[in-house]
Every structure is written in C-alpha cells, then in structure tokens.
Image (tube, rainbow, N blue to C red; front, side, top):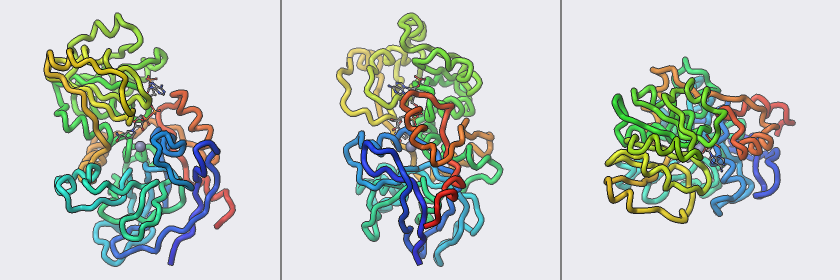
Length: 354
Ligand code: NAP
Ligand code: ZN
C-alpha cells in the first residue's frame, strides 16, 4: 500500500511553489513511516528550488528539517515505535560500506549520500521528495530520536542548521577557553551562537547588519563585530581559534583570515563555488586554514539532538503556513527572518485531500 500525500513543490526555477500530490512508497521492512508535524525552511531549500547549484530536477518537494511522529514501522524496525517523536535531516541513505560511512561520516559517503530530496532512491531509483509534505517514509538507520521534552517546532531546525554548526564546532575542538566566531546571523548562524555558547566557548558574531546586535547577545554572543567596518575588524586581529562562515553567496573571505589566531581555521559551510581570490600569505604565516564542512553524520546528529535535549536548545522560529512559503523565500533572500521559518504542516490539511 502506498501513501498518497499532499505537498508543496517547485515546478521550475522561476515559478512559485504550489500544491503537488504524489505517493510515498509502501514501507520496506527497515522503513519508518512518519507523519510530519513541522519542517524548517533552510536557505539550501531556496538554492535547490531555484536551481542555484545546477542539479535541480522538478517537481521538487524541498525540506530537510523534518519533525514528526511515527505512524507505522516495517517488520524489521527495532529502534522506533509508533507515536515516537522523530526527526529526519538532509540524508535518507548512503552506501553504508565505504571508509567515510564506516567512520559514521555518511555525509561524505564515497558513493554519494542520498539526500532527502532532489536525489535518487538507492533501491528503486525513484526521486526522493522532502519534508514540505504530510508524511515521509525513511530507512530506520537515517531516522533520529528527538527528545520528547523539546518544543517540536523549535527542534525542527536542529536537523540541518543545528548539525551543520555542531559538527565543525566539535571537529575543531570547541570548548571552554576556545574563541569562536560565527559569520552571518541567519538560521545556521543563530544555532552556531547557541551551540558554541553551550559548549563553553567565548563567542563572537560577525554580521553585516547593525540591527542584530541585541539579538546576537541574547542568543549567546559575547561580542558583535560589524564586518563592513574596517576599524572593528582590525580590533579583533589574531583573536579566533575557529570561524564558521554561514554566508550563502560569494563574498570576500580575505578580511576574516587576519582575525584568526595562529593555527586557527576558517570553515565555510555555504556552497559558494569559486572564490575570486584567496590571499595565501596570511595562511602560510600563521599556519591558518580555510576549510569546508557538510552537515554531520547520523550518530553525530543523534549526539547533537541529545546535547540540545540536555541544554534545552531549540531554534528561534517564526511559524508559517505552507501557503506562505513563497513569501518566506522572498524574506530569506533579504535576511529578514528571526531566525528560522518553520512550516506547520497542519496547514496542508486545508488543501483538498488527495
Ligand atoms: P540564512 O538563514 O538566509 O542566513 C544567512 C545569513 O548570511 C544572513 O542572515 C546574513 O546575516 C548573512 N548574509 C551575508 N551576505 C548575505 C547575502 N548576500 N544574502 C543573504 N544573506 C547574507 O541562511 P542559512 O539557512 O543559515 O544557510 C546559510 C548557507 O549555508 C546557505 O548557503 C545554505 O545553503 C548553506 N548550508 C550549508 C549546509 C552544510 O552542510 N554545509 C547546511 C545547511 C545550509 P547578517 O545579516 O548577520 O550578515
Ligand atoms: Zn539545510
């Protein structure tokens, strides 16, 4: 038995997203069927829907910050029970045999991870479709247990924005005594402030937007530096062990390099494509690195959710109806969001049933 679902899909790079009906697969023995309660709106959804990365296939149902409750489990599912609060992030499968998968780095699978949408299912070759929908069917190995005491809507962005910041913070050894800076106060950036603070670091925000200072401090920043002000940039020269840059579009990263301490790393999480220039002098003199990072593995995502459960961390969100998704995309482009849109999937019930 397949599951007919209502969803919102992009049908081309230029048209607004609109209602789309399709069938979810009949659960395989290791599948979990999830009724979706909430789905966060990531800037990657916008990049994908508008084909910024050149690999879009339509119709495309975006959404990879999924929170829901288990409706049904396959006969071989042991880790999840009907009614449980669960999450699904950016991946729904990987080869599970290669070196990176063996280390729990499914996001770096040598055969390519299967993404939650705009990807091809490894078993039957059908297109994967994401969380802007009523239900999803996912292999249990890629389903996460969400602490029941967290606000379900606020927890949705942990599945992408949360893990995308948690993973580099952990990989680069953030903890008490470390000096961390986050570039950009959007969905990812605000999670970076909260997580780095909870890990005990000294936290700075680099922002283009002077109006965000008070919020940044409330979210965990000890200091705010306006990145367009050369005097403020000069005042933090040599300060940071780690900078995580969350800006979604090509920008000059050179001004941030001198603010790294010796041995420090600037980690980019946006897929920016080629940068015009990168001055290697300040990297060589000071053993500094410029690196990248992609979400996190499944075990690490569970660790992050448990960490957020212990520290009571969720995203600051603005709940929207699915019918408002196109306005939300326009506002995301203007960095007008505090600090993550989350779709209440109950709004899909207003659309005529499939
Ligand atoms: P977002 O909510 O739109 O936030 C981006 C922030 O970047 C803005 O709030 C703004 O902060 C700053 N910014 C600087 N220049 C900008 C510009 N030209 N246009 C818009 N914002 C600009 O985005 P997000 O959801 O956090 O995602 C950020 C990037 O990470 C996206 O490219 C996304 O695709 C990528 N991403 C990567 C991964 C990964 O695993 N590597 C995972 C998820 C998302 P200020 O106003 O403070 O300057
Ligand atoms: Zn995302």
